[in-house]
Length: 426
Ligand code: PLP
Image 1 (cartoon, protein in one colour):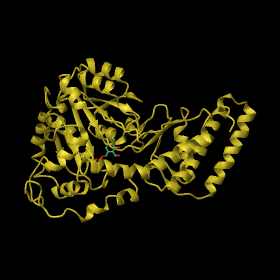
Image 2 (image 1 turned 90 degrees about the vertical axis):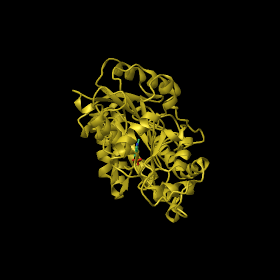
Image 3 (image 1 turned 120 degrees about the vertical axis):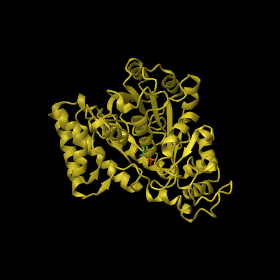
Image 4 (image 1 turned 45 degrees about the vertical axis):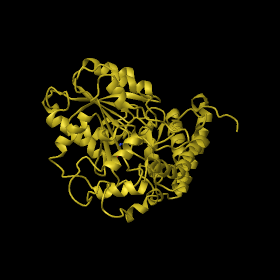
């Protein structure tokens, strides 16, 4: 096909006729009475079925050491499961805690323990500080922000780029301001932009001078193993980098099997320096007599080995990759060359991030909603739900079927074209 003329370069008459076309396409779209949902970064039923055998495990109830997993105890989690995921995360098993079903809960515990008690190197509990500030790369994961918001923690944003957060901006923020106590970072296939923190950026985050002696990197590696192509990103080894830089307690690493086995019944992991692990357990012991070791044992038996986990992820990829390809194909077919949208082609993770012209994102989401296509609210990937440029849209193609993704995305592309053209004409 002939390359399209960018909308911004068209004459008012050309633009008016383009808007007419898009209005007709949009009317046809609404007439279909669709009811589709691209809001949720959840595994599809087909993906959950991949782990159905878990429901018939474990066989027996003893772990390797002969411990009865049905009983209380073992606060740090089953050693053989910690070994398996220590291998996958590139850390030592005694630096890993295997916990309950949600890494988000572990992040929350680490945050609250810092607030109530302080962490390694804290001069005082964070609640006694006049102000606590976190650095938030944007766009990012909404639940990271709402967690901070619920405790009145200030958020300052830095742009998320292809190689990770804008590390110069981060360095400048942490250097002189002791209220900057933490930073969120999704290092691998970030939600929603899909970027991967490079070794170089990770090394700078690990080594940068921080005014707060207890500055923490909340290293949320939720998508460490969630590749969509054969070009598998390797997560930077933040614990070794931080340790080598003399900041061994700076990173706390989180991961889970929520998008490996069952989103509601997987196993979550925390990793850090040995001291960090002991600090974490020293507070956890007042809240738990031990995790669900039955679930941990069945995960061990289901996977068998770290390679078993990798092979399982390849089965997810076979289901997910065509859906991501469909998103790209629909956006390319409708929008390529118009100069009104840029979108990611992630090599892993669960999301596609689309940037439309400033001021258009809410309108696109509204148009889509009125056509029966639910999108994540505009601004959701920013602190307090406000995208200052109102341009970012997060798409989550994992849950609907491939046919539904194709239909929904053709509709979304129409909404983008219409909203952008209307704005130019106004
Ligand atoms: N971290 C990120 C970046 C996520 O996108 C998600 C889920 O969407 C989670 C954490 C939730 O993890 P979990 O199910 O282990 O609580």
